[in-house]
Length: 369
Ligand SMILES: [Zn+2]
Ligand SMILES: [Zn+2]
Ligand SMILES: [Zn+2]
Image 1: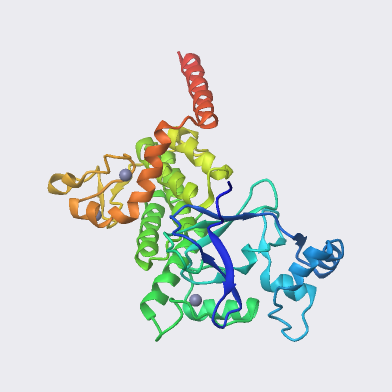
Image 2: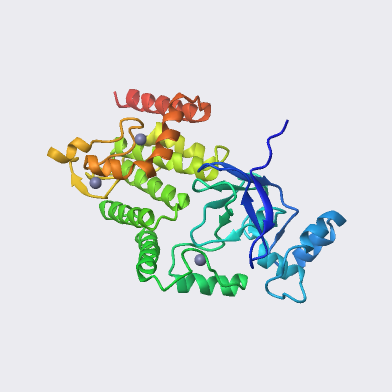
C-alpha cells in the first residue's frame, strides 16, 4: 500500500487555491516532489511552443491556473509569469500541478528545492507543520523590509501580501532587522570575503538576526555556516571548520534533502575540512563564537563561561554559557539529530573523498621527507 500524500489542494479564503497538510509534517520532511507539466525558457515564443505540444489533459491543468497579470483575459505568458517556479536550468520556469498551487508568505513554513539533474521540483518543510495548516513558500527574497517585499510582489505577482509578517500595524523592528540581514549579505559579497575575522563577525551577526526574526530560513542559515566553515579552514582552524560544516550539512539535508549534491559536498567538508579550496591559506587566529548569543572570545571561552561548553551530542555547537546552551536547544535539536545520525551512516562518496585527500596528504609528506 502506498502512503497517502501529506498534502491536499483546497480552497483558501480569498486567495484562490492553496496546499494544506493532511497530517502533521516534521521539519525537513519532503512534502511534494513532482515533474513539471511543462518547463520552458521564460519567453513568450518558447512558452507558446511548449504549450502547443502538451496533451489535452495537461493543457487543461495549465489553463486552470490564474493569470494575475490579465485576470479577465488569460495569456500563456501571463500564466507562466504568475505561477511558474524556477527549475535548476537558469532562466527556465516549470509549471507543476501541485507545487504551483502553494501560496506565498514572507514567513514561509516550506521552500522549493529543484533537483540537481532534472526539472523535477521538491518542497521541503522548513518548520514542523500542524495537520490542516496551509503549506506556504516564498516567491521573493525574504530579507527586505515589508514595503520592499510588497512592491516586489505587486509588480511581479500582482497581489498584496497579508501574511503574518505583513498584516497588522507597521513593524519597524522587523523591517530594520530584515534590511540589516540584506545589507550584511551584500557587504560580505562586495568585500570578497577577504577580511576573515571581520567577515566571520558579519556572518555571526547575520545569523543572530535571522534566528531572532524566526523565519526558519534554512537556506540562509546553511549558507552562513558554509561560509564560516570556509573562513575557519582558510585560517587553518580545521576543528572550527569541521563544526560549522556539520551544521551546514544538517541544514542542507533538512532544507534540500539527501539527494542534493550540495548536501553530499557539505558532509565531505564535515568529515574532511581540509578539502575546502581555501584550506590552510593563512594562520590567522579566529575568535570562538557562541552559537547561542554570538559572544566572541579569543582562544575559546574561559572561566565560568567555559562551563557552557559545547553540545556533547554532536560536537558541532559551541556555547559561552549553560544558559545560552539551554536557550538555543530548540533551534539546535533538529540539526543535532541529523549530525548524530550522520556518524553511523556510511556515505561512501564522502569517505572516498576523505581517503583520496588522505592519500594525497600522505604523498605530500613523503615528498617533503
Ligand atoms: Zn508577507
Ligand atoms: Zn552565549
Ligand atoms: Zn548538538
